[in-house]
Image (cartoon, rainbow, N blue to C red; front, side):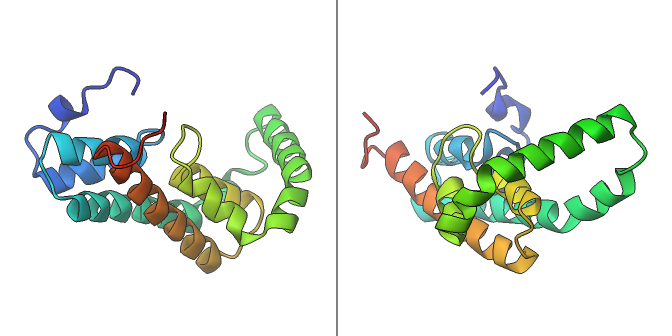
Length: 164
């Protein structure tokens, strides 16, 4: 993704650490770490799922538990940027809150579980904060979505399931 040679970047690290670091990267996440774990590092499917999902769950917890304090610290100090984010967050809440009300927590699980760009643990964590989902509940449902996504990506990577 984005012409980054992940293998070269992490070549001097243990495979488990390299896979976790790749899974920490936004957009790449486990969509990239699992195929690399299976193809380059020759990990077993359960190991690839474990290390990639663990990293995604850890980054979700970090985002979920640190985003609000960071936002509160920055609010009121950024002038026009502040107003932009207040407008953007208000607009986003207004546009998507009805969908969340209808689908509930399953929407968060499905949003994270679908292994496409702009979905995943990072975006799911941001969405959970934006919609005010309680932290523990958000982490549970995001973790469930991460595990489902990891299984889907693994099945696709192994050729067991085909997208086309």
